[in-house]
Amino acid sequence: MKLISVVVPCFNEEEVFEASLQRLLAVLNNLQTYDYELIFVNDGSKDKTIELIEAAAAKYPKVKGLSFSRNFGHQIAITAGLDKCKGDAAVVIDADLQDPPELIPKMIEAWENGYDVVYGRRNIRDGESWFKLFTAKWFYRIINKLSDIDIPLDTGDFRLMDRKALDEFLKMRELYRFVRGMVSWVGFNQTYILYDRDPRFAGETKYPLKRMIRLATDAIMSFSTVPLRVATIMGFVASAVAAIGVVFVVINRIFTTNWVEGWTLLMLTVLLMGGMILSVLGIIGGYIGRIYGEAKNRPLYILKKSIGFKEEE
Image 1: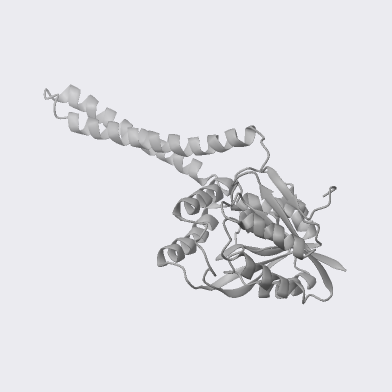
Image 2: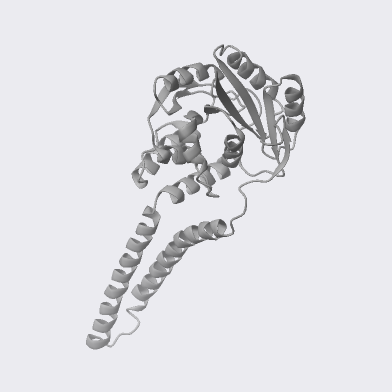
């Protein structure tokens, strides 16, 4: 009997946990020809999420839990659950019930038909602001233009991965993670299932603007060197402007006696070059900062507690 692992990252999900657990169990218990394990990953929650995971694991033998020593982030929580899962296929789904657990059997069906990765593609996104809808729509289109790989449009981390694709994914231990891009990079046969995304069942979004910007930055810098090429172009532009300024200063010096006239252009040139130089240094600094983070070779996460796993796991 094939084993399906379901990984659920959780951060302050006290309000939605029980509803999410029951819907997932209802779906998984109906998979009559499959066994399953349900892994909740507590990403340093400040509420009672870990207590709820422990209670669920005590009540339901197939429920397991992992708890971090602090908040390491959503993408790391996904990775930790996938590290520990033993399934022939693994499903990643958030606890907020925006992605319907009832879609999991359709993902398994597509997997059995030969696809190694099956991801959910959002058709309608209810309960989200126009700003988030607009930025999400254009983010995927921009990253595809900048990146060397094709990241599916309008998708999240809700997906199923076959064991061979998962094993290749887990070989990548980079600190700044963009899971959906990394899964696309792995390749294999991939397909999607179109669905309507529901509003969040309860609680607040775990991706406010600050985290969205951080995720977008990690995505661009992890899968594209275009910003570095833009920095190079900016450097050439600044050099060209500076050269024009030098020519102007020389002509002004030779053919005129009014030294004050060039002051405005000189100041504009200095300000323009200074702004471009700082912009270029910022872009380069972003990449260097990531090199520094990777060079320290720290573990991706620290587990404070494992619940329901055997010692050898």
